[in-house]
Length: 253
Image (cartoon, rainbow, N blue to C red):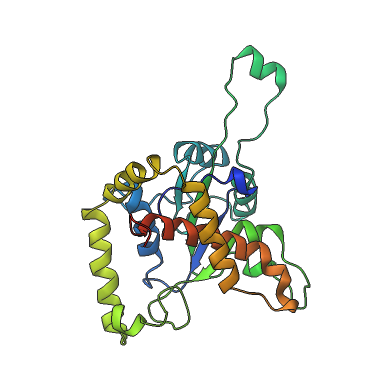
C-alpha cells in the first residue's frame, strides 16, 4: 500500500483494515509492509493503539494522505475507545471546536485522508456482532476485519499461487514472513519516493484510478443477497486500484 489516494472525487471517507489472527502469525508484518512504502517503520516496530483520542487524531494529521499504523488493540488504554477512534478517523477531521475558540486562536481548519491498519488477536468487532443481525454496523465498514495468519488458510496470505510464493508448510510460511519483514526495514521509503515522482507527472492519474476501480468492481460481483457488502467492496476497490496504478507498466501496455 502506498499513499492513500485522493478520496474526495469518489465521495469516500477515510477507512481502515484490522488484521486479526493468533500471536506471531504475520499480522504486524503486514502493517510493517504498508508502513515501509512511506518510510514509517522504526526499530521499535509500528506505532500502537497506546494513545489518547487526541493523540490518535494528531497521529492521523501527521500521516495525512498515507497509512496510519495502529498495531495491537491490546494496547488500547480503554477498549471502548476503538469504536470512537474508528468513527473519528472516518470523519476525516478532528473533533469540531467552538467557533469563538477557533477565531480567538487563529486555528487552521484541519483535515486528513488516511487508511489506518490495525491488528488484533480476535476480530475487532467480534463482540458487537449479534446472531441473525441483518445489517452491517458502521464501525464494521470503517474498520474492516481481515483474517491474517500464516498458519491458516483462506486469509490474506493465500491465493492462487500462495504455496509457491509464500510456502506450502508452516515453516516455509514463517520463513517467508521473517525474510520479508527484514526487507521492509532495509528498503523503507524508497517505494514512496518512486511513487510520488511517477504520480505527480501523470496527468491521467484520476482516470486510471477509476479504471482500475471499475475493473475490480466488475470482477468482484455480489450476489443479490449480499448487496449490503457493496460499500466494503468499493473500499477494497480503492486499495486494489491504488496498488495496480502504482505498479503498472509505465507504457500502460
